[in-house]
Image 1 (spheres, rainbow, N blue to C red):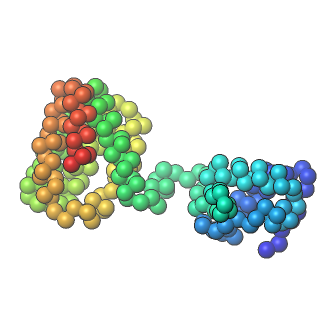
Image 2: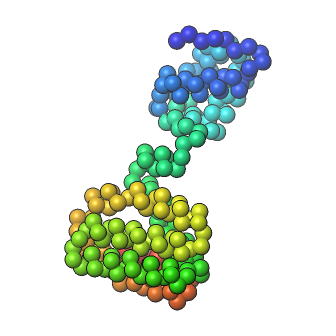
Image 3: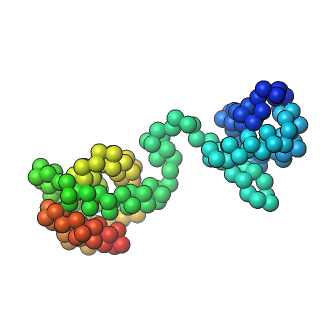
Length: 219
């Protein structure tokens, strides 16, 4: 690999930019250990302090991972302008679901405070679809109705960003739910809890909505 020595005007920023370029181009790949400080000093023609500052900047940005006693390693490269949709497309389903669950409790609380009559009708409609599909053993329809039920609660929260985030996370999980739920038995068991959640939101009972949402997640 041919390298152009860094001139005095460049220093740590230019070293960081060249290392970043190598990561972007695939010369450095995820999990690979970065060359040692003396090797980098020789490669870029700068002093130790510039190398350390460049590594620090890249570690802070998440491109490098410093492990004491082991060295500095390349993290998976992520484009700086990567959208949430793109990020979720390469995320593990369990990680997505964990974030979705964190959001779910908050949206239940907010929906109890901010829901409208029209939104309540929408939530109840999806609840009835969920109950019917579960009783009829239609797993795909049941999962979709369950997703729609919780997304409609998110919309009723009155916070558009929260609603958009919840939709982005939950919409990625249908195929995973189909893998982990072979039938509708789990949905039948939680139909009552989902109905209680709806009623607490309808009654504007913030604390009860929180309890119901937490109980659903525990189940």
